[in-house]
Structure formats: structure tokens, C-alpha cells
Image 1 (cartoon, one colour):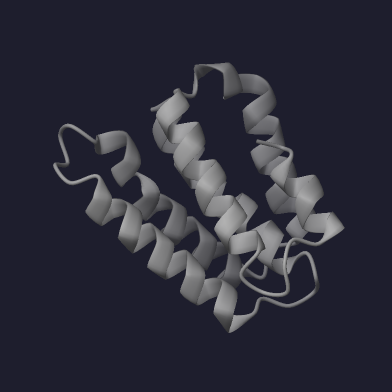
Image 2 (cartoon, helix red, strand yellow):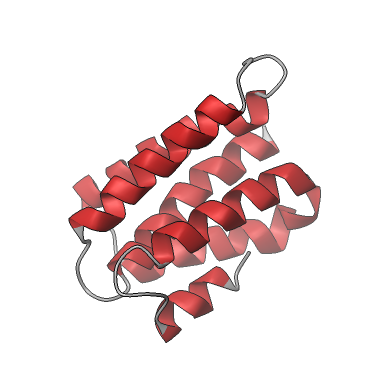
Length: 123
């Protein structure tokens, strides 16, 4: 349950990163879709890799935040609060997968900006 919530919160962090410069770029959303699909293909076998398959929740929560026009600060605070409360319970594999995804999305449009770097450091 905690890993599932981690991946849900990850979607909100990705939203905050993409929205940190004021506008979500299509290149950023394409990167999210492509990278999550690539990760899911890499970790085949749902039972054995069910933690990573929670990346589908990441994608859903990202697009829900877009549709709801959530404030980036609300999204990043939600992720930050979760990490502070439960972060030590997240396994190394999930942290690595998340970190790689975050870095790819943050650098998808114009490189990693200072405001994006601050959000990256939450993980």
C-alpha cells in the first residue's frame, strides 16, 4: 500500500516539475508517457515486479492533476509530506526508478532549471 501511494504521489511531483516553469510542455508529457512505457516493458512479469507496475498510477495521477489544474505547490507539498512521513519505507528499486524518471522528465524541455532541481531534491 505504501509503494502504491508512493507511485501515486510521484505523479503529483512530475506534475509540479512540469508546471514549475508555468506551462506543461508537450515534450514533457511525451517523455512521461515514453519513459513509463519503457520502464514497464523493462520490468515484465506483473507479480514479480508489481511495485514498478504502479507506474501506471503515476501516469494517471499526473494527468488527473493536469485536468484538475492543480497548483504546483499543492502537488509538490503532497509529495514532500508523504516522503517525510513514509519515505524510509520505500525500497531502493522504487527510489531508483523514480529518480531516473524524474531526471528524464525534468531535463526534457530546456534542461533542469533551479526550480526543478529543488523539486528533484525532495526524493
